[in-house]
Length: 494
Ligand SMILES: Cc1cc2nc3c(=O)[nH]c(=O)nc-3n(C[C@H](O)[C@H](O)[C@H](O)COP(=O)(O)OP(=O)(O)OC[C@H]3O[C@@H](n4cnc5c(N)ncnc54)[C@H](O)[C@@H]3O)c2cc1C
Image (tube, rainbow, N blue to C red):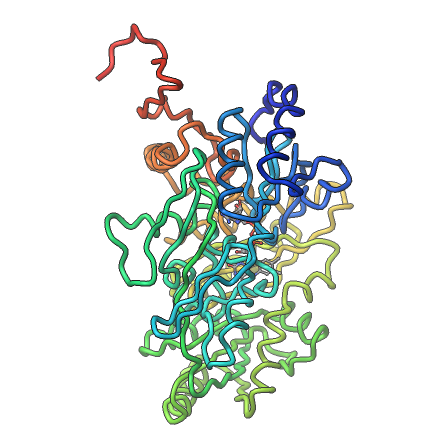
């Protein structure tokens, strides 16, 4: 993985940098190699890099001072939450500071009148629900990693989850953020009210993968727990039939609380792991959850079952208790570690397609398994058309990692071909960086980089991620004048 060339000047100035950081963040600077080692990778473990130094601030002021020091000394910074990201967004740089936000883990405000919770970025996703569930509330976006991943990481990746089909992904549930620019300026966007003033910069921050600013506070919307939630398991004779049923349910005007699909390898792995009660002989399994008033839920379950039968479902089982509903979901929520037990290694892809293309793409993926000589297990947010093919391989067998990477790239290209996008929720990071040109023209990428330049003119915040080639801001027409000295003053400017 090619990363920006390390800057020798930074290595030479390491001692001076450490001294200034230790003063700014007392007790929060990790310089010893052994102690830096746990930060060398994130959820995309194929890539590793020891950071120059790790800084763990305890307040927004310490974040701001760290960024000011780094900018002044020309040092790159990589923000990190819990490090569960699957696209390598928190992969450190050899000449960069790894800025861990885990100590910023306090819940600052719970406001039931406005139905909001304000937290520091290191609070876990599930921690928000835990703080309000005794009053019958919850935070809707629920990545499968919610027990560990942080809300700061969720904002940076615009994370999704099982319940996002009905309730929206992170960006639809965040009302306000505080973030710190690379210059050390603290900026607030939005608040407890709907619809922030001015341009939708909040929308820009969501999904910005740590390239625009460091998020230090987040205000989210909380929802009241639905009166009833029931899940139904539906087994199909083929993945195409399951895919067609997904499109048919949505076309019928039903928006389930969650609609997830697993193919035979994935559902059997999950069944072996947690014994969720899945039909082992199904080629694809849909888990559909309906929530709301009890009468509405009963009616919708009947309609979903009927649509599934019309599309060839041969198995149907409705949850009769909360325990059973939780058991149905436990297989899905544990599907990734379950698949980890049936293969030496797996690579989790993340592309999104229009729902109507599901049968076509799933069929093509079956053919591609033979072409690449590798197996795939499919576990995904079917209702959103967000695919997570898990490519199974063994990195110890020569050439298999490269074949898995080529297979993954072919799947993502297929997603774009059918009108979809390269990522649904895991972000671009380093994993899909070099595929950005499949989806975007040069002009599109340059426009996106102009936005980055507006926030981070020196390109010091998380460089090497998202953009295949990071232009210098001056090349893109935004002139940065360092210390008042205009570069190339003789050149005519327009
Ligand atoms: C088993 C498993 C299941 C998963 N399931 C899902 C799923 O269902 N849905 C889903 O969307 N994702 C899923 N993920 C991916 C991952 O959990 C999410 O992307 C999550 O939001 C990352 O949060 P984190 O705190 O671990 O962030 P990290 O991995 O630490 O960082 C992710 C990115 O965010 C940036 N970042 C982190 N904190 C900040 C901050 N405070 N300010 C600015 N930038 C920041 C980093 O620079 C990096 O680019 C899964 C991961 C695993 C391992």
